[in-house]
Picture 1 (cartoon, rainbow, N blue to C red):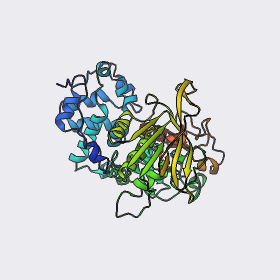
Picture 2: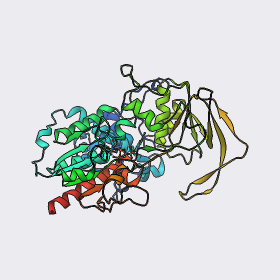
Picture 3: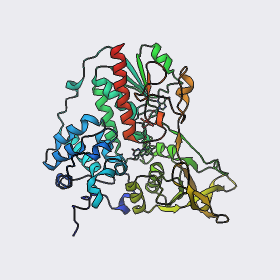
Length: 464
Ligand SMILES: Cc1cc2nc3c(=O)[nH]c(=O)nc-3n(C[C@H](O)[C@H](O)[C@H](O)COP(=O)(O)OP(=O)(O)OC[C@H]3O[C@@H](n4cnc5c(N)ncnc54)[C@H](O)[C@@H]3O)c2cc1C
């Protein structure tokens, strides 16, 4: 018999064989009974390590205690004091490295499933509290205009917090839909897009204006926005510029970046028949990389009808950076993990189409600057994987457009936009946060940065 004191209450999921061919959400969430049972596993630690492990300091033991008592709306209210997007964070936060990673229950057995409980409370609120009256939440305007550049989690959080304080906020987004990676990157089966749309809708009801298809730095610059009367600007433009390996054959037909592949499928709905978005076809696909982006691309490829999907990753399962849950799901769905393997060449036919990827086997050497053991090639171990499509998911970089077009805006030593602890840049009135500052990171860190920036902007404009 399962001892639920030691292991998490499982969350119902679609059968792996079935879900590997559809885009419906993998997990259906706890029932109220399961949620109460899971919440009762909390040890109510006095020093609350879980809250300290959360980048936005959600009062975890407090909301979990409410769920244990069946007071689900009260639980939601506690979470939303500090987290702007709980339905999203409950689904995509890397809890194993944050709150759940330090849960005392985890010392003997599995930690409390804080992420699933957060998701449960937020979904319960969305489903049951229909009389939500956004108008009553609209703060009285203070007449001050703020521009937010980029509608990812950093920009959305900053916009929401400023709107709550009465600022007139306009969000400029370069794509045709707000949401950032939540809309174009993370697939429907992990984060249904109606949840992202609902969060955006709440901001609109609070009076936030969204201007889509507006590339700041091209259409107009940050300096021009300030000339137009925006008294402060928050830049949350992410780090969406894909990296490539610079190996021979990367320009062949059938090679693409994971960002492009995922954007075509998620944002441009390439998985739905009624949309004519072309998606790189492929029956045998190699996805290069081991992060969340690689898992998402591989799992989408399976759902798009591929017969065989490989993950090619140069280190071992111990170092692979993707969330454990996503790796587990990918394995269940039949993705073939080629670990300790590194591509050296993409092979093509006379017409320039991909026919294979040449890889070399690797072994782990001494730790490198990141502390992880460095992969070293095993000479002469090359072999060819027979594939017709290669998706590169080896990381993304910051797009320099805002740095290049904003007068005297300084970069930090990682190439991101330079800020102090309060998200202020070297230019008065210009703030930045999220991946645009840190490089590719996480949703919750981007949200935290948006919150910090909103508080700093408020302090700056109140004192002005
Ligand atoms: C496929 C994928 C899966 C991921 N999975 C997870 C996960 O499971 N859990 C997790 O915590 N994190 C995950 N991440 C990372 C996480 O999504 C990011 O760290 C987070 O979205 C960063 O938020 P942001 O607001 O800084 O930037 P983004 O989400 O990148 O948003 C930036 C927005 O700015 C817009 N923009 C860019 N330039 C301009 C411009 N010049 N003018 C106007 N708009 C502009 C972009 O179009 C974009 O909409 C994933 C990332 C990817 C790509």
